[in-house]
Image 1 (spheres, rainbow, N blue to C red):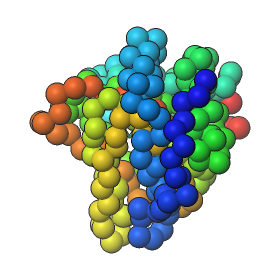
Image 2 (image 1 turned 120 degrees about the vertical axis):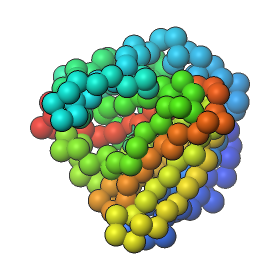
Image 3 (image 1 turned 30 degrees about the vertical axis):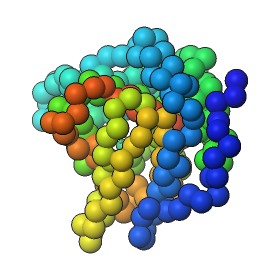
Image 4 (image 1 turned 120 degrees about the horizontal axis):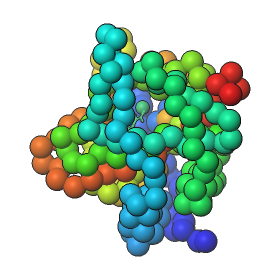
Length: 206
Ligand SMILES: O=C(O)CCC(=O)C(=O)O
Ligand SMILES: [Fe+2]
């Protein structure tokens, strides 16, 4: 399957001024492929409302999530342990694309479905103990274009980028140690967005 356009990826640059590397590749596939992946992911992924435990209370988010990985991996997130589902053909194709373009390999993928702009994600770092420290994270976006924001822990400096339909963003190096990131809510957004973050789990999460 040929899904990559002959784009000039050599031009990609770090959008962070210091303390990490975030590379926005822009659109990495033709719109027709991005449309098809969006529809297929919407219909074939085992979407579930996210459950989080905050101050001992079990809460359900409107945002839906799913987690896929190589066999045998468990994932602990907000005090809940989830078992990974086996890769689907589309996820494997997208993992291959993310690996080829980013030059890193991944063994798991966290998926998020934001139904509209009322749903987002607050400030956090992807620095859970179960993730390899400073491993690269490749983020593919489909559907509604949304703003992605980064904020430095100490200086509070902010960097923002619009994540386009069929685009790739790569976070690597010491980014998760020094920067938080978020997907801000926006009343203007009325359509859904799917985000895939390919990650490298540490062996201890096995
Ligand atoms: O939806 C996004 O672009 C960000 C998702 C994210 O930060 C995460 O899943 O950890
Ligand atoms: Fe994140």
